[in-house]
Image 1 (cartoon, rainbow, N blue to C red):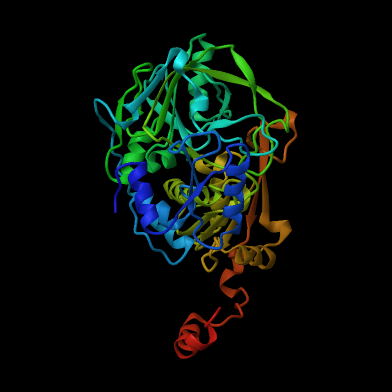
Image 2 (image 1 turned 30 degrees about the vertical axis):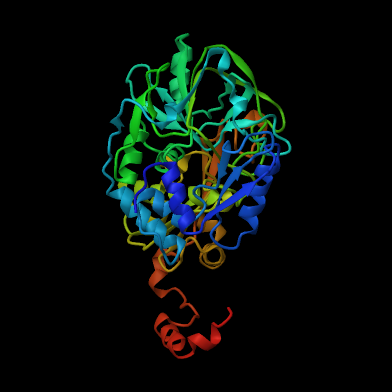
Length: 482
């Protein structure tokens, strides 16, 4: 279908019935709590939620949650057909798209809608926007949760866009929390090691494809602008930021330009995170770098895009699971693993901690190869925990069947491998505060034992052929009301 920018995308979402408008909610806990309830209680097609007339703010100062919480909205974002029979069908389609993806560089324009309003110097005021206080135990209001943070490598010159949380300290400063090993963190560390300041752009309300690219694992050195253009099928429009000189998204809703200085830290957090815990240092505040905001540009009636992480399933766990599954599938194939039939990065693990890979076994060790690589390729290496490898007759997105495969096809003595000293994070909820450098991985081979897989006990179930015959004869009667 295609779309121009976030606003055009929202118009299309509204037309196919997946936009919920709520007026009059409070920025202080209510909009985040309402989002949490809607995600958990909606039985099908969690809507995007647009809050307007937020308490204390004029009409038109809006906050948007849940942009990617349905298959149809994800499909619209990446230019795929809008209807699929199952999640795994969409994962397969998305995997095929990224396997054949041709990147599209951004196009430079002189100006864009984001320049409609400008704040500089003493006029800068982050509280002009309905910045949410998300969770009851948080340490502050968070401007950046469904956004992009733009940094530039000091030597190579390439730009990285990542989604790194930004807490409001006051009207002109933001906290910047980036986990170790993330590309933006590497940029930051290089600047600070040299005693140099680092310019930063924070943009919210960007093209949905750009947010999708920035919030997933794109290989080192690959510009997210180019990747997002490839997903969308047309270039992202950018313009030069007046303060930073960076290419900023010209149609974003709000763009903040600023600078971080080496050695300057300020207490940040706590913040309820993607795994469902306050896992950084519990409820302690942690010193983090500060962004001094020099300039804010924003559209008239701006939309602050937000994400509400919490105990899964949460506002963006669904989309992250689907996207990461497709990325991991692609990386496994590029690493040389053949005959992959499906990948699912489960929502219960925040798309990172519990991964299932389905294969058709071709040779001895095939299952172990798939499991170990799934735990270590780029999209699976950060804060992984469990990888389960199953046979081709198991739909990895079907949790009941996954557990059936573990329970009936694996044996603990021969089926489990442990990898130690792997890439952890401050967000890892299973580790104490002083032990977050490394974690371990468990690989569970839940495939039929290779040595006698062709003689493995037959499955007791209705065959697909006989099932189709029964449904043709009895389907209307037995499935009515089901």
